[in-house]
Length: 317
Ligand code: NCD
Image 1 (cartoon, helix red, strand yellow):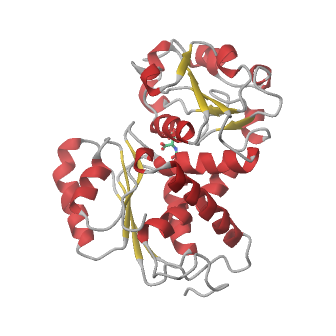
Image 2 (cartoon, rainbow, N blue to C red):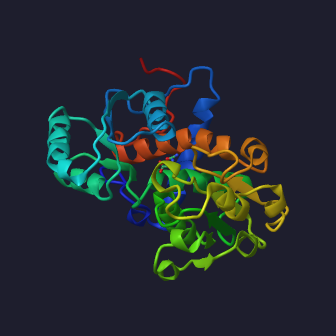
């Protein structure tokens, strides 16, 4: 994977996803150490280019880079329209001229990371573009399920919420299917993308049917800032029908886990109680996200041949 871009899950084979998850498992050990740092990417520079607000993803890429001893530079700015595409490419070229070893990009317009990747020599990692893709979120979700269930193949996963506008949903549908899981989606009709069945998922108009016998329930955030009032009659009604609480969770398997990429609208898509306690694994997703992003930075931005991922116990600077 060295030198390649990671723009969407389809860039990866099933075997490569397996390698990323295995590497993430090793990376998790680093977080348990006294000195949470390995010299793997020492002397390398990673630029985080965030054109859209982010808490978890930006922080987690930054911590991941630093734990690998890379020099991490964060560049965040707001840019809300494609008309700014030219200046985005200028920014990308400027950053390229500073010889980074990898560039992590988030933008609210689908396709921007690809355009940047087209002009940059170094690997570009997509940290979320519009409603298109969020591959490292899907990978950290796969990693979390693998750790919880010991496998992904043969499981059934229900994704509930605004599927149509969710890059998390798209990438997770692709990722879980590639790894052998069955994926279902549930949402009001306005939130189910046209032609979703062509992706190989079954769409359900009710949570009850969608959750029947599933191993994993993945809740999505209602993007209140964009869609409130437009896609469903009221938040109260949405919450009553598609919000998850322990009552509705009973339709899933007894040992089902609940996931959410964050940030959670408590009391809307997820009850307060479920947001905080098992079987929800929301903070495990965050924790696993750091290890997973360490694995991605390591595998894509390269290292000298023969050097192991965890060479040395501490080091760095
Ligand atoms: C998601 C995102 O930004 O795509 N969050 C995340 O990366 N953890 C989901 C969301 O904002 O709803």
